[in-house]
Amino acid sequence: MTFNWLDAVIFAVIAISALISLTRGFIKEALSLVTWLVAGVVAWMFGGDLSGYLTPYIDTPSLRVISACALLFVATLVAGGIVNFLLSQLVRATGLTGTDRFLGMFFGAARGILLVVVAVGILSLSPAVHDAWWRDSVLVPHFLLVADWSKNLVLELGQGVGSQ
Figure (tube, rainbow, N blue to C red):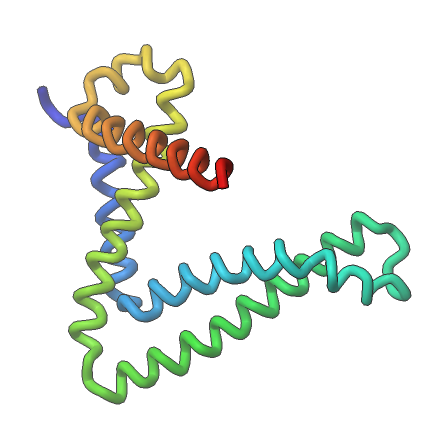
């Protein structure tokens, strides 16, 4: 089998993600990911509480909750951005920039692989699986194995959490 255009796209996604992370570095990439996750959790957990304080300003309850969640999300992103900036300055001052960027490249490649696994997993549920470009891909079967494994892992973890 030879590589087709889908294999080239898969390779490009992983390579571009790795190159972006090579320029940004591990600290920035990892903290950005953590900041986005924390922002989502903060908005989810405290958006309802904050919406009560917005009652004098916003009449519609659903708009109040959306606004509260958005405010918390953005505020957390800003705070995370400040922490990210300070830590990246610390890395620069210590002279670990080369190591940080090298590790960032691996982080970016892992992120690219994760993106491809998710995309392949979603596309595997569509009629695309019957198309020649999908069937003739060299890389898709490998990513399908990981997508199936991760789906089963998530289902097992979900059952474990639900039974407690």
